[in-house]
Length: 459
Image 1: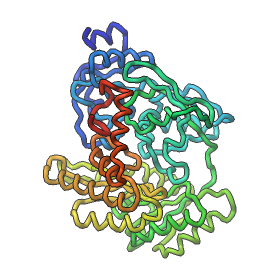
Image 2: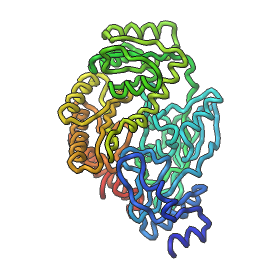
Image 3: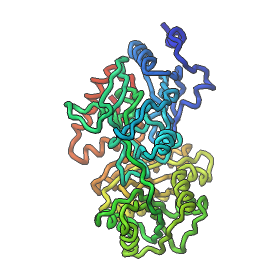
Image 4: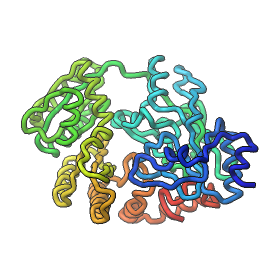
């Protein structure tokens, strides 16, 4: 039976007209994607099960899509595939403040989830910049980080259990409501960061915490990237853990200034946006004293209105950078690496030297509190020479991260973009067997290789 006929007979909601499917072809990355056979919008896990069972039987590729915010191509559609969108799975199913969990379907937007939780005095800590559009399932599938990562860690720290449909249509549940368990292999963790290659997440039990209401946001301006890195490391080394620690270079700093109205002192090359929880009287004063030891150009203490404006500007920084494009066909390719905090000063210095050597217009910003650096490369997608140059830059950016005991991917995943870098990291650690193990796991969960094939690695 034809797949379209199958969807119609099963009364499963789907799109098959070209104009309807176009929004589901590509994601936020520069990978173009391909028009699928159909886009399925299931209402529950049973419909996902029916679709996967049929696709597995017919050996049809399947790409899962949440908010489409992937920056490495992990949710770009594949030729002759079926796209399964989770956006109708948008309900918050259960909540318990006392038990510290929320149960949500995979298509719930992160901002919507936190809007619900904050009305009850709680928060789900992962805070990706794309939280307006990104979904529970998508952020779990890429192990997303975000602005609060330095304090709370990445998504993997906050997932208690999952509902997953496997490639053959079987439905499984892992974990659950409790905050700890020890029952053999941790099947929950295996789906976190798997980018939809092992199964389709349809709901999740997520750990929550009371919202931190009292914190002080301040801005510190530096003329050397290594000084900014030293300030963040000294804060952490001396027992302070910022709620957030973001940085921006001159290009990104100017955008934040333009959006928020905050003035930039003369000579500033780097901006540090720092949130200090006020749990003890002297925490903020101690943080301020440590920052001043590194001789910043200036430190600004923000009031509530300024604080909110700066936060919105930082959250929207990638979108705002897109407005800085000057040529037809120009796009922004985002490098995403991470190093230990102690290695940030030297890493930033080397990355700036890399930018000068390649001569590509590039802006740096990121979650500097956990060593996460984003290099935003303005690249003409229509120029083969420029694309090759950008790809070489990304490779050498990865080399910097590895040389400083870091990783080639902090929070954006692998997708299409970083398959070679993934192997490079394993080789650098003298552990190529890691990739063999990942491929073996893939073959067990998805023997016909129908789930997001060609992403993360090639079989």
